[in-house]
Length: 320
Image (tube, rainbow, N blue to C red):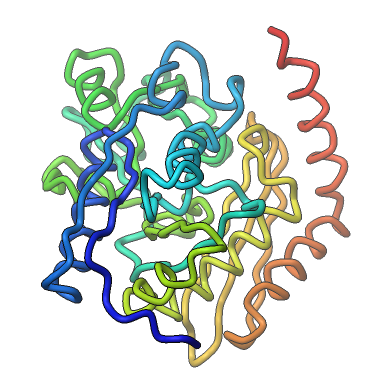
């Protein structure tokens, strides 16, 4: 690999939500520690995903909306790298983009947040639980059919405010975001992975660059965590094979186990009436293949019809 010296200036494209800025500043400080003579700047941007708050993500084009504008900044050379929450990164990154680094993972589980109740089990019938995620919705309804699962959009602060205003009895959020913003005290209970399987990439940060910037990729290499990256690769391969759009409730979580990767995955009907789940173990070097194999297992059990139906429903519903 050619050696590109050390950078003199790097610009990080980021969304302007408090959590996105925390993530970008985290990468900024890591880079400044690595390259003390480098000026590392943030380019804050508002994305369509941040602007459109009155409709579910699934209806407006999915999570890629949080990534698009940042990619434009890379293409226009206004930024050298973009920092993303891995669960927001589209399952297929087209040319000319690539992930140059995936950082060590923060806590991957979902959090139960409530001002009145300590856990999901404490909630009375009809209690309103807020979530913007079909993945959480499907798993919630399957286990707690007597609860009222209701849509919840907005950034972290907005979601917490809606809870505090009494619009919901509880909300489900990613633990990582709460902890990163110093809001860990709001977590009443952490939902075990066995009960609430996380989204592919949840809790991990990824750094996106242009494929024609090997210099930037080389500078970012020391931030890369191979173990987290292999786990996230397996999760994303699973989700991608099952048509990982926002319209399909898909969960995937891989963890190191006895020198191997242990991957658990599920795909579900949004109302929780049908859930296909499975698990697989294998070598780190086979991460992507493992994800594909587990997806094929669920497809063989009948998941493909479910996914095809949901994707068709989505297409039919896009005009609404």
